[in-house]
Picture 1: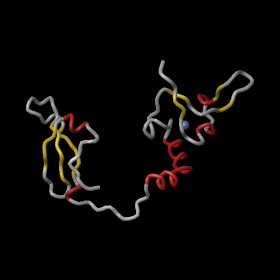
Picture 2: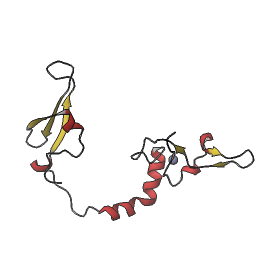
Picture 3: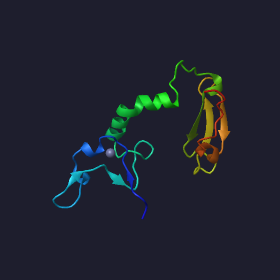
Picture 4: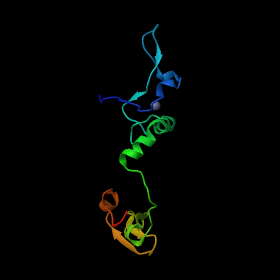
Length: 127
Ligand SMILES: [Zn+2]
């Protein structure tokens, strides 16, 4: 059995739902949700509410920790590439066609399915 994770929501235990009510008969308390997996916030939160609660409490600290944006970013030809695909556009009519498209120049460049799925693979050279 896989290990259970705790929702990281700072107020998860304050949402009084039946599934949060745990403990022995005379000593039940509402508790932070515990599950094998969560859908929100990269698997850290049981709900969007809990994710928002966390951000309300820690968002400023997190942004300051990882670097607050101080100047606007600029969309240029160098960072305008994004991945996309045509559903079942392949020659056998059962595979997708994957490609990069530059939103400024409109240039398209074919990529493989592996490159499409590889989150670290990018044509962008600027931020
Ligand atoms: Zn939660």
